[in-house]
Length: 118
Image 1 (tube, rainbow, N blue to C red):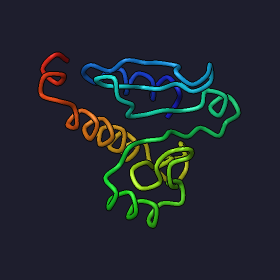
Image 2: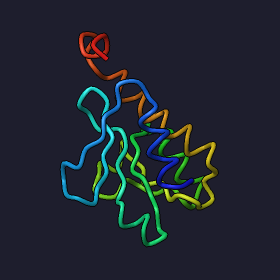
Image 3: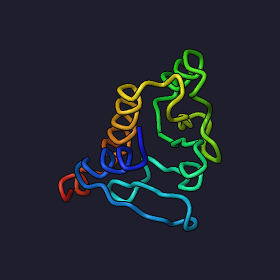
């Protein structure tokens, strides 16, 4: 997966916006004002791309045990977030599933009013 693939896949989801709330390096994708994916642009440039994604806590543990490229979320709640190394043993299809899972977790946590406005 390239940075453009990641960018396009995230932005194609309903109601997604992009932000740089922390610095000029950390690209953040939000739905309803809440983060569901973030990634360091300099890591992509240095050929060590990774993305932080929200994940169901039980599934997060299972994924970490099964894939070397999935670790507890860097600078995030280790219970609810994973850092997924791009182009590791995590295949692109699984990465897309994990991005969608993160999006859906955040989207479904929004209030009904916010979801209806998206």
